Each structure stands twice: as structure tokens, then as C-alpha cells.
Image (cartoon, rainbow, N blue to C red; front, side):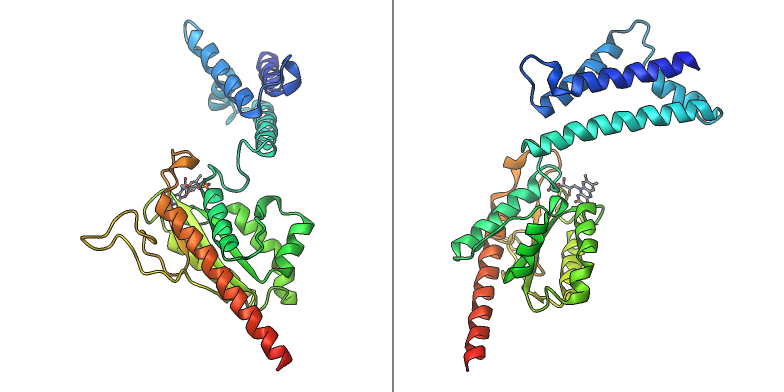
Length: 287
Ligand SMILES: Cc1cc2nc3c(=O)[nH]c(=O)nc-3n(C[C@H](O)[C@H](O)[C@H](O)COP(=O)(O)O)c2cc1C
């Protein structure tokens, strides 16, 4: 048992040491440190002869089911490793190497396109990452004429980060803070369908619960006829909102240009509708 406990302690200490920035003369970037650590572990196990593999993994698989002390020690080691990984990933997010909320950055590219479209239509735009939302950003949402919700599609619906945000908005739902504000939505997933419609419908229902006014995409479906093209606007044929598809192993540069243009269209459309509504309300107020 002592050998197993010492092995776990060393493994965690080694991970912390390699993932920390202050152990380098010139600190490496967070993602580079993570890569370096994972490669060093792989190289160490590959170099062993005979291959013994990871004692923590083997000990857990062989003994944790029968011995509570092994299970406890292994659980502590896995928790410590997870928090060391979480810390370096958080550093990578803070350094802009990993986009918040948008796991691979695909949905973030679309969010920027939506913002660009709204900006071109003369709207003042603020991008808010819902999983790191601050009090000031909640206030921005409270005072905006329109809010365009976006989330990657994970497991056939909105991401956990978006759901946490939606639940955190329940006080505003009770007070009607966002009532009669314009809303719209977009999502991205790896598969052409990927059950994205579920996500868009959820965003529309979420907006309806807040008594918001939903604006659909307002585009005919593209890429659905013999002469049609993959580069058509709304190439995936959604009406409820903008749906995009990006290969799950592709970088941010692989977000499809037609999906980016469709997202820009959504931003411009919402900005135009919000301006029309605000002008109409102002006219009514003085009539
Ligand atoms: C936990 C998880 C669940 C996913 N579920 C789906 C899914 O239901 N349908 C789909 O087409 N793609 C799914 N994907 C793939 C992502 O939607 C896809 O990689 C997307 O481009 C990620 O966008 P992001 O970079 O903004 O996170 C899933 C990915 C993850 C990590």
C-alpha cells in the first residue's frame, strides 16, 4: 500500500511541477506546458522495458474494487491530477489560447460573425462569454435592445455552460427583466444535422420563458436543389436560427465561410429589427 501511495504522490508532484510556469527559465505558454507534460508521460511509459504502464491505472483497475484504501488513494490522486489540468486549462483560457465556453472555438467564430453583422447594421455590440459572465455583463444584457444567444450543440442540446447561464437567469425571468426584448439564436455542431434543431428550439423556448420576442433567421434554405451550392447562405436550411457545421477535429479556420456569412446575416437582421422596434416604441411614446 505504501508503494502505491508513494507512486501516486510522485505522479501528482511531477504533474504539478511540469504544468507550473515558474519551473521554466522562460515560462512556456499554458498549452505548451500541457502538451510537454502529456508527451513526457507517453515517452516515459513507451521507453519502459518490459512495459509496465501506469501503476495508478493498474492499481485502480486491479484493486480499487476490493480495497477501500487503494480506492481512496487513487481517487485523491485522480482528483489532484484533474485540478492540476483544470488550472493549466484555465490559464490557457485566460491567455486566449482556449476560447471560453466554445470548446474548440468554433461557436466563438460564429459569435464574432454575428457581432460583425450587427455592427455593420449600426448596432453597438458586446460579446459576452456566458460561462465567465460578470455582473457588468449581466447589466449589459439587462439594458440591451436585443440578445442573440449562441452555444455549441453538445449531446443534442445546449452546452452545460449555457444551461448554467440559463438557470442563473431565473431571477430575471421572475422579475421580467428581459421581457419584450428581441432575442435570436445560433449554434454549431460537428454533424450536418447533429440534432442542432433541438438546441435552437431550446434557445427559442428559453427566450419565450423570458417573454422575449424571437426573431428567426429570415433566409430561404440554401444547398437544397441541383444547382444549389454548399456556399449558399443558410446552407443547412434552418429557419428558427442560424445553424453551422464544423468538423469536430478542425481548427477555427475550418468554420465554413457560408456559415460565417449566415451568422453575419443573423446579426444584421436582429440589429435592424431591434432598431425598428425601438423607433416604433419611441414614436408610440410621443404619439
Ligand atoms: C461533449 C460534446 C458533445 C457533443 N455533442 C454533439 C452533438 O450532439 N451533435 C453534434 O453534431 N456534434 C456534437 N459535438 C461536436 C461539437 O458540436 C463540435 O465539435 C462543435 O464544433 C464544437 O463547437 P465549439 O468549438 O464551439 O465547442 C459534441 C462535442 C462535445 C465535446
